[in-house]
Length: 82
Image 1 (cartoon, helix red, strand yellow):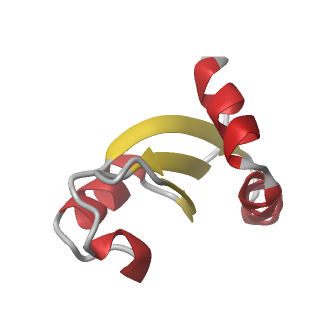
Image 2 (cartoon, helix red, strand yellow):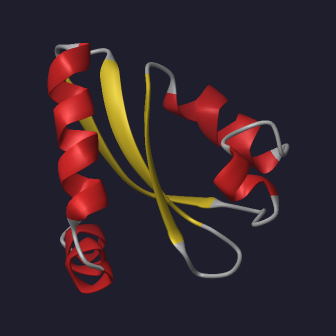
């Protein structure tokens, strides 16, 4: 499928972080190195628990927004569905 990804990380404090990238491995490494989003900087190490691929940036960004609107329970169901 596409070159645009939405991902969910489980942080060391068991919180969930959702983001967008074009390179999942690089982005997760940035988060782990404390160079990712401000939210994850004090919550390393992080674990990649969910990814979705899309053909366009706009579709991926829309999906990122949808996931961010989900409740914790709904996000856990999304992760467990894999």
